[in-house]
Image 1 (cartoon, rainbow, N blue to C red):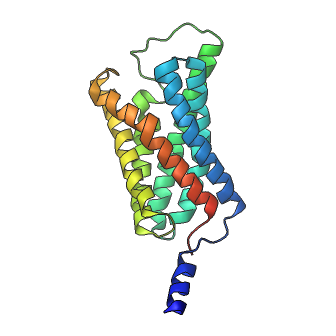
Image 2: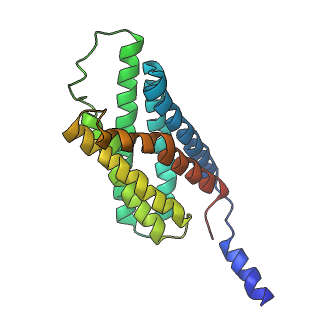
Image 3: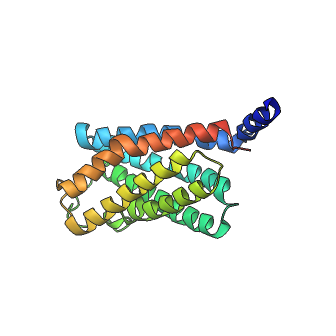
Length: 211
């Protein structure tokens, strides 16, 4: 019995993480912190330069995390994993471009753009929320099918993905940011669920893959 228990513990032990996994883990933890800071700066402080910088930085950090996540789950279904990676990278780049454009505009004090008009680069969050949400939904499914990450991260990933998709559809259809259909998911995603998911994923990546 002791031998069986020892073998079970050894099987659950994490392998030594690669340098990139540690890098991605640190980026994921930082992305979680910046997501919370973005929400605070956008909703509470109403600080446009800070919120724009957080959006820009989070897009770059997310691209690092997505590659590590792809490496973890691609053996389960390589085609779905690649599709999720491509969608996620599109969302990350769209977020970085959106934040970079807003940051450049506010720092140079350009003439204000009509806020009712959609962004040409990321209309109503098509990439930041829409593409990213679909990508995360597929990754959550792959996490649950594989055993490389805790299943709870996969279940929480479903929640984050659903909130992101709801946010995109809300901004596209309802439009009014003060509407509860947009406000409630935005507060849940920005202040609670998404920061927890990123930080939890970052800790798991830092520890290494399960053998």
